[in-house]
Image 1 (tube, rainbow, N blue to C red):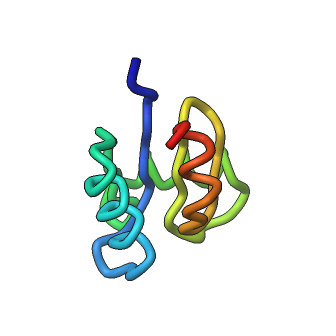
Image 2 (cartoon, rainbow, N blue to C red):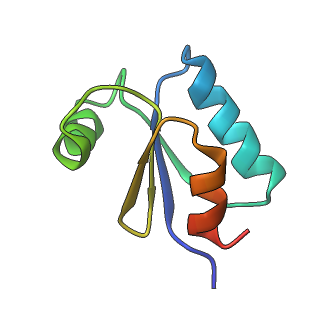
Image 3 (cartoon, helix red, strand yellow):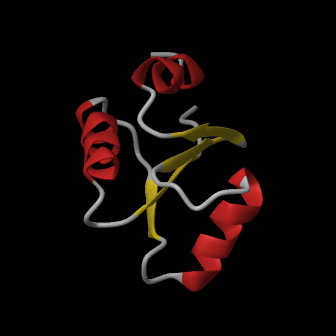
Length: 78
């Protein structure tokens, strides 16, 4: 069963682009939220993390801030 993965990002953030490419390369299905244009998702991200930095990856409620490849792999069981 695939885990629910959400990525809070902006289109111009280089680390966001890397996270999404890594997930695509790993065949992980994810929802991508552009917090630059989606105020509701931006507020949701801030509530989860207490900060405005992107990317934020939410894997089944486990929050990972930034592109921490090892943490992401561990959380996804890769």
